[in-house]
Length: 220
Image (cartoon, rainbow, N blue to C red):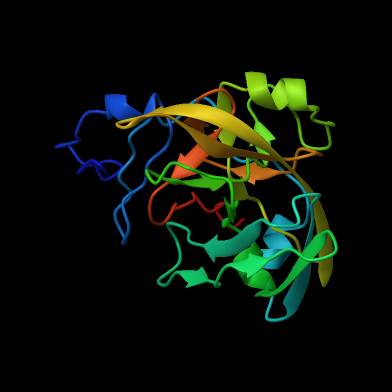
């Protein structure tokens, strides 16, 4: 399913037509992108990113969601890190799920979502932390998420010892090789500062296979 295209490789493969522009990323160090990287949008400033990069502490990240049956996992991977940090999937209970993250690893953090009603197996949905038309701090209603054409899933990070993120989850029908199927549309209710790359979506859905490698900010 995933292409053989590593970002920056001269032998890049073509995007798969089966996912209609959903981002499909190959596992491992190479990133296989099956949708277009957006060169026009980079990192959004703020939220303590520079301090987070050099921090040795931890951050308690709480995801607040109305999807009680959903499971979430975190992955942190940047083009300046030697290793990939990740968690197992955890189920939200009583409207929340909490993770303890090395603060330095909040930079380049992505959030994957699984829901019990999903019927497609082509990708795992990521939380869209910001759509291209939004600025960090903007409220993002469902209509804006559904209409979002380009999205960023890489968090710019935080230097705080705790953070809360409100995640909205909706059912979305997408095309698959076996016909239409249900996928997760997930987004931050308040747009967050993000890192490149950004990707095209299908009706707001941001999806991936494997690890998303984020572009870390250059230290001053």
